Amino acid sequence: MRKLVRMRPIELDAARRRLGACHDVADLRRAAKRRIPKPVFDYVDGAADEEMAVAANVAAFRAWRFLPRVLTDVSAADTSTVILGTTAAVPLALGPIGYTRMMHPDGESGAARSATRHGLPYTLSTMAATGIEDVAAAASAPGLGSPDLWFQLYITKNRALVHDLVDRAAGNGYRVLVVTVDTVVTGNRIRDKRNGLSIPPELSLQTVLQVATRPRYWYRLLSGPALDYANFAGIGPTTVMGTGELFDPGISWDDIADLRSRWNGKLVIKGPLGAADARRAVDLGADGIQLSNHGGRQLDRTVASVDLIAPVRDAVGPSVALLVDSGVRHGADVVTALALGADAAVLGRAYVYGLMAGGERGVDRAINVISEQFRRTMQLLGVSSVAELRKGGRELLTRA
Ligand SMILES: Cc1cc2nc3c(=O)[nH]c(=O)nc-3n(C[C@H](O)[C@H](O)[C@H](O)COP(=O)(O)O)c2cc1C
Image (cartoon, rainbow, N blue to C red; front, side, top):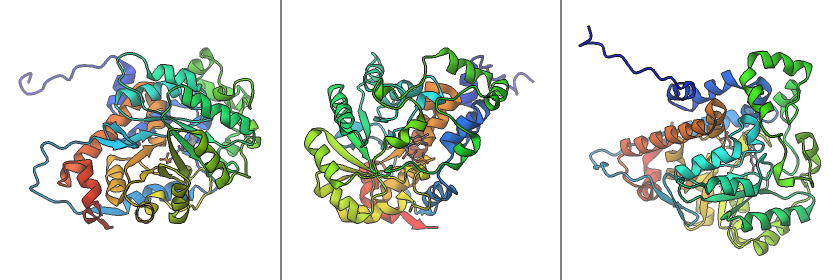
């Protein structure tokens, strides 16, 4: 028997065992759901109104089929690429997620360290629970590699606050400013309302019942530093209920012109940009466009961003950086995005499921899974480099 059956070594580290059993983003999502209280899981997983856009985003990536080339020698396949002037190991970046420390205490710092370890950019949200300075310090820890930090900006009503954030991002080595333009008012998140979500989570009668089912989450949350909007310490809201007043329905293209004159680094506009708006952003000096419908969390029924790639690429020409988020769950989605004309894909929920499943190591797992899927898909398509994928990509795709 011993000759026929070899015992697999037993993994004693529970987190490693759990994450090792996650082979795709759906596995990470399931592992996260088992560990995280429902209101917090739903805050990440949920979207606006009837949640049509979030489902349609995923479906839109999957509406494409590959037309592989064979016998092309892909033994030296190289996944590296240049995003906004800096080399990344894979055409991927981690996107901005507000209040990441609520999902796991490793939070923004853990995600930034993981991105840096994998040679990828990390975007810090305006609404982060860890501040600009602390994340810069975490990502610069010895042995991780050279960080590529981006800062996501909401143009708040208080413009002095905006200018302060921009100056602090510049002063702390953030290279790219990503201005989110789809949040003039907050999206209507029904799951949060039904769950009575409060941010930071409060021990109400409802949540006390959840402590019994998710004690580790509550222990971690209550034994760590208090949650707050760290970038506004002392000057802004401390709970999500106070943020409605923060966003400015009056923002306009003049604000983009103002930011362009203040920010010397790369400037990216993030939102559901069609061809005309993308062209306008570029005319005002944007270096890149991040096609996004906020993962369906703002305007439900918004067109899937993957469907905007080809028309926007045609409108802005080859030199403008085109990023895409909303619905990226698999390395094959990244291949599809690039084949259609994008330069990189940006992860949102895909890495937060990993974070909720196992902290920083869970983010590592999400990045590794998606990177391996990307490489394998590229090779099976008969493609050896990202440049080749970008150049001949549209011939590799057909509609399902
Ligand atoms: C929990 C959560 C918080 C988010 N917070 C922000 C934010 O603070 N700023 C921002 O520009 N986008 C934010 N987003 C949107 C993401 O950056 C990204 O556009 C979206 O997650 C992409 O959709 P996907 O997660 O379905 O792929 C958030 C998304 C989630 C899921």
